[in-house]
Image 1 (cartoon, rainbow, N blue to C red):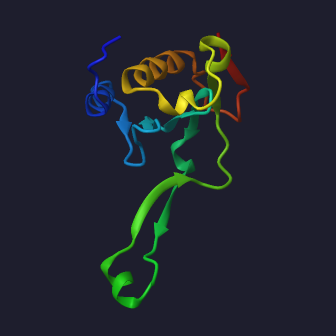
Image 2 (image 1 turned 45 degrees about the vertical axis):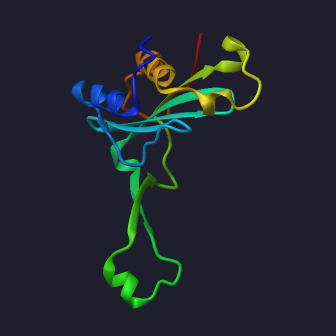
Length: 143
């Protein structure tokens, strides 16, 4: 594992592989949104698990972020926008890395993973994620 891998380096390597990292992604805690063809992948590291889900790209929508006052001046200036899943979005496939079982994690360790570990887990889970384009495939636990 390359311990010198940075978040910028990781996202650049994903882009070189044809995956578009979406702006809603961040390194701490790890949450990665990636467009892969007609699908969107969501990597989420929280608690003691790291989860990778596949959605239809059409499941993404925009959330308009208004300023606190929402006055005409601020509305004219333009509100911020955040890409989110539509409320009715259902994952097509999901794989889960159980850090409690595999690494003895007890609390929030998944949220504290560094970039090299997150990159390795993404690659591992991506290889296990079913290539489906149908209603929800069952959850698969990664051994």
